[in-house]
Image (cartoon, rainbow, N blue to C red; front, top):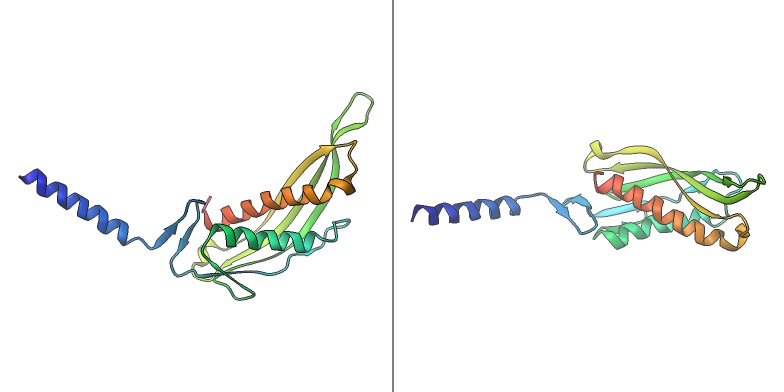
Length: 170
């Protein structure tokens, strides 16, 4: 009889504990406080020499898209509860795999962005840091024909890194 009451008490304590939590969890790994409702992303200007002309828009839109698709936050034009701003600071193509005849077998496109994140509800989560990602491609390929695809792949990696650092506490 006592074990039955202990079991019921234990279940009630667990339920009460689960209901009293103030953090929302999602399948994306995001842990966003209940009072955070909006996110804003300022346009990331490119200060990288030789960067693709579409990089500013494609990166900014990719960052917005990751928050719209992976959270329930509303995207606002400015003054969000979560705020992102920054710049594209690096865009470089380099050789990574040199063959015996001193020609490159692979080239690498690297993009670096500097991000300032502000959480208006919890300033302990604020950060300002740089993120860098790359994609390799065959040196026989013309960069102009594959550049948009490489940029999309790199943007996907960069925005996921930024998402994880800002709301997944990784």
